[in-house]
Image (cartoon, rainbow, N blue to C red; front, side):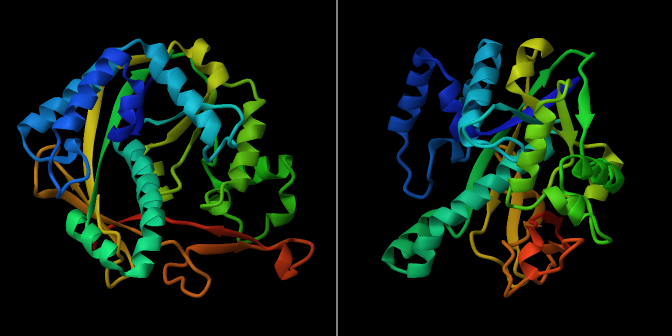
Length: 322
């Protein structure tokens, strides 16, 4: 089986050894462009070549470093299916693009949280930042291809609403399984429910599990058979994970301000191109006072509909440009 592990280009420096890291430092020292945040975002074939040197080096480094570092980092900060400072794992996908979208979502979310105090001020600092960003932020995301044993056993999670109901009943969420129960139940921006399920699945005798992305329409993923996967760190030695040396680069830009339709505009480019290959959107963070896309889903308590017992799930997905 083949999978893709997606990472921000910025994070690749932590996968280099000391000698290889010198090359990265040299590129940092040579960089002198006030209109860009980092050297790897510059246009031109030379920058593309320099990026590929870094990426190829990592793809050829010992596999143990790539996978163990990923699991170690994840164990500290946690993810959708594992709490922070607990067991680690590898979040990956059977689609290079789907994996990149997961990383892109977190990059956008973190960037908006960082810029929000500046934006609310509308100070001179904001003007300088806008000039530097040209009202858009850019990021390079790399999806590394790897393979594992063909005999691996991944438990399907949230394949349909019926299987999710059975799982939720088994771990104590039965009181929320009412008529409006659906697959979004474990896919809110708050990871509480999904982490309960992840801890439960961690006790099972499988190599991990497959699951749809929370950021893309379910029907589309089901039709194309695209899935994310989680491989717990305890299973890494059993699966003979190996980087194939293949990778895919994605260059995205996005506006930190919503458009007139209250959506964030996103563009996908060729690695060295200026014309977008694809344009799409990200829904805004939903608010109780303003939810035009019905992103807030309330799950009633079956035995007591007191508002305090409602479970609210706040969703946020990428959308096609129309």
